[in-house]
Length: 414
Ligand code: UD1
Image 1 (cartoon, rainbow, N blue to C red):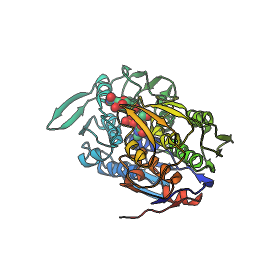
Image 2 (image 1 turned 45 degrees about the horizontal axis):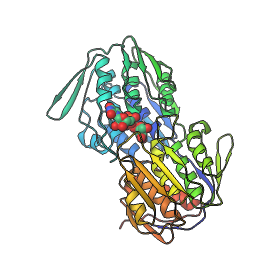
Image 3 (image 1 turned 180 degrees about the vertical axis):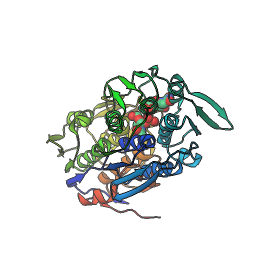
Image 4 (image 1 turned 90 degrees about the horizontal axis):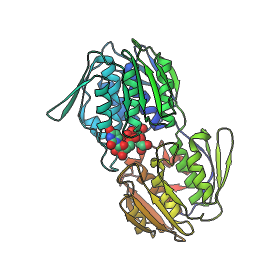
C-alpha cells in the first residue's frame, strides 16, 4: 500500500546483484572445496536457488545476512526438482555445472517471470556442441556426456543464460571452447572472475568472444558480488518520479551508463561520484524514445520501471522492447491510474499526463510489479499493489528502503 505524493530524499543502499548471484550460486556446484559468497541479496530468487543447490546435495548456510557458505558433497544429485525449475527460470543455470561435474543432469522446461515465451533451445544447442547427448523422456530433458569436449559455439542471440551455462559446462573438461556472439553483460564478467578464482581458465567476458580452456577440476574460493544495477536504476527512477533527491550507493557507474543517459536526456540532474549516483529532479522530465537492447544497450529489466516516469513526462514517448515478448503487462493498470498509453505488441506510445491517481493494481511479474510501486509513489491518493510477492524475487526489502527515503509505503497481507 503506497500513499503517493511524498518527495523522496536521501540515500538508498544497493544490494548485491540478483543476476550475478544466481549464476555464481549455480556455478558453485562445480566446486570441490567450500565456497564463501558475500553481498548476496536476501531475495526470494536466491532462496529458490539455494533450495535447488540443497536438493542437488550442497550444504548451504548463511554466515550473516548477506554471506553464504556452500560446502559441496562428494557427488551431486543429478535430478533437479521440477517444482524449483517451474518456480524460477534461472534454475536452468544448474545444467552446465552439474553436467560438467557429474556427466549427467535431468531437468524439465523452466518457468519463471511471466514475460513471454522463454525457450531453452540455445542452452540445449550449446550443451550438444560440447558433446552432450540430449534426450526427452516423459517431459524430462536428460543431458549426458562421459566427457565434455571443447567446441566453437556460435550463439544465435547473445543470450545471458546460455552464455553462462556454456561457460560453466566448458570450464571442466578437455579442450578449448570459444563462444561467439556471447552476451556482454557485467554479470558475465562476474561469472568469469568467480570461475577463474575456482581455478578455471576463462577469458574474454565482456566482449562477444569468450574463450574457455577446460581444467580437470575446480577448488573453492571467497567472492563478493557486485551491486545490482537494476535495483539502483529503480531507486533513481523513484527519486525522479517524486521530484526528489535520491543517492544510490554502492554502484558501479559503468554498469549504469545506459540508464543514466536516458535519465539525463529526460532532463534530470545526475551527479556521479566514485561509487554513488545522485539524482535531483525538479519537474516532470521530457518525453524520450526508449528501446531495450542487450548490454551495453538499455536493459530490458529496467524498461518497465521507466514507463511510469514516461507516463508523467512532458510530451510523447515511444518505447520498444526488443528482448522479451510481454514486458508491457502493467500498461493496463497504469492506464487505470490515469496514464495515456497505446500499445501495439512490443511497442508503446505514451502521452505524458500531469498526474496519476492511486487505485488497486496487480503485479504480474518482478519488474512490472516494481514499476507499479513507482507509479504509486507519484500518484495522488493510495495505490494498492496486489501479488507483490513477485517483487520480492528481485528487490531486497523494497518497502524498508523506500520508507528510509520518506515514502509512505507498507506491506500487508490482504
Ligand atoms: C537474463 C536475466 C534476466 C534478463 C535477461 C536479458 C538472469 C538470472 N536473468 O535472463 O533478468 O531480463 O537475461 O537481459 O540473469 N532465448 C531463446 N532461447 C534460449 C535462451 C533465450 O529464445 O535458449 C531468448 C529469450 O526468450 C529472450 C532472449 O533470448 O527473448 C534473451 O534471453 P536471455 O538473455 O537468455 O535471458 P535469461 O538468461 O533468461
